[in-house]
Length: 115
Image (cartoon, helix red, strand yellow):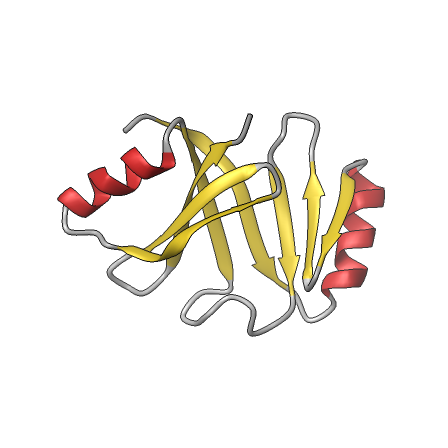
């Protein structure tokens, strides 16, 4: 598995709507809204999602996503190391993605660009 870098971060905020609007205006990012998620998309394709409290499970209120070329192959490599996927393979926002957890319970994401 070759990780290209960090492509996504998710942060819980008590005022995710207001914070998203503030950051979109301050940073010139495109604001994408879907359900409870407010996603800021930057010029290089990276994004920051702002979510309401409780959206991301404890012990972390931050979700980080790593860009890979093949999410299923990357998940299989993690499984071979004893790291099982957390949840099902999903698609959204132009990515296929799969979650996994660190030993401390924090949730991370592997993302593959669609198209």
